[in-house]
Image 1 (cartoon, rainbow, N blue to C red):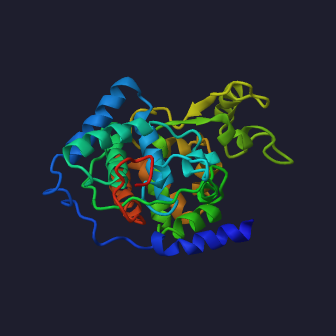
Image 2: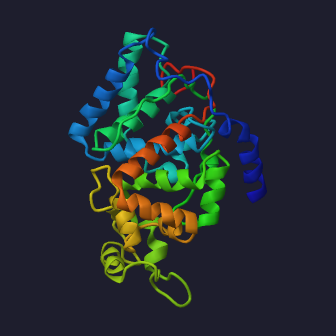
Image 3: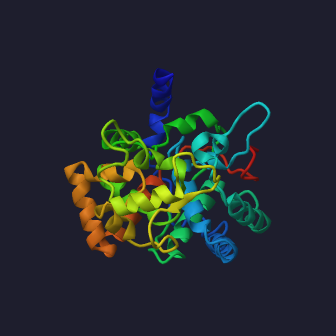
Length: 316
């Protein structure tokens, strides 16, 4: 099973390493000049009714780009013959797909068959950050949508239990550096996690410790109250940082204080270069934002699609 998974990664390596030179900030200037305004308005409207939308859209972009490149394959619905990415275990909790659907519907009425679902997803992720008080940036556009979406491939997504070696391997396979790893981890400044993603750190951590010793005891105690060992509350969990609806550098500040949720967060402090970057980003919101923007553009430029889908949930 592990061997087949590694072959799968190698098979898509050319996609992960192809940073498409055809992408351009001006891609729709002539064919659909109001595309970005339509997409931003769709995000704003959704945020008025649901404060979890920004975190959902940002997470959706990561989960799309890490499987077959940024080709909107995460948006495809499962069929009788195929279980799609959105129904793979790491993606069950993804939501806010309706934001993409609403933007796509309006764009199809405005400029039919022009704006790809992959570009809509990249733009909604940017807007999710900007509308949460974070930086904005010019998104290079011109991605195409993929036709293949396989639930089992979601096993390639970096897990919250990963150590630094596993994280580095996962990111490097997609042409992303340690610097990108630390900067993109800052996306955890938005959102919420269910108990299952950090249960390993607060119960039966290892033979000598019930709780991960790298975690501040008072913080661990508060998490154990919310997430007891035999938790029966389906949606129990914790926010990823204390300012969960604001895009800021609080994630890094809490990380250096021993108040991170995931093993993969804590792992950033176990290697010299990544630990230094965490410290720098904790000290300077501006430095973090510059690095995040650069890494988001780099990650979202990993392309792999071939067409413009007319409906983001089904292939043409």
